[in-house]
Length: 140
Image (cartoon, rainbow, N blue to C red; front, side, top):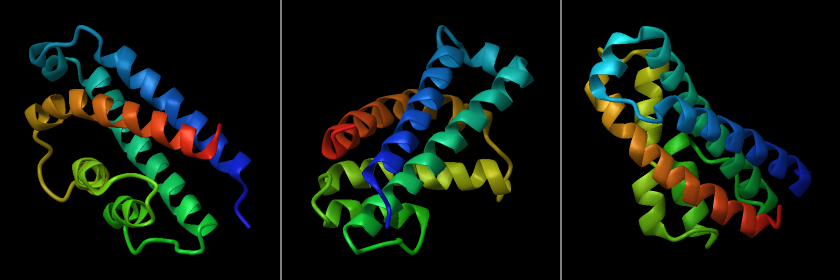
């Protein structure tokens, strides 16, 4: 049985990854991003960890609700919305980051640095809300 305390610890880890991404992205320009391969790879890794951590949380909550796990990362957000944990509009907005995660991890295609750079702001926006809502839902 999944306990809420375990899920809250996972959310705490996600919050740490979020803070690290926020720090890495602070004041970053596309030119800086493209020229600093260490910072670029660190940002890619933070995005990967944030998405993976969130999908772990999603599946743990679904399991807690006797629904999970979801068939894939994307659907973990959809099924959470179907379980009334979060609204579907939000799920449909945040779920596509799982595709970015797949590109970063599996290099299904050449990684477009400009696309990753432009995604940083939305990752920060949506996962800030994700953390707030899920922490409130679980009373962490």
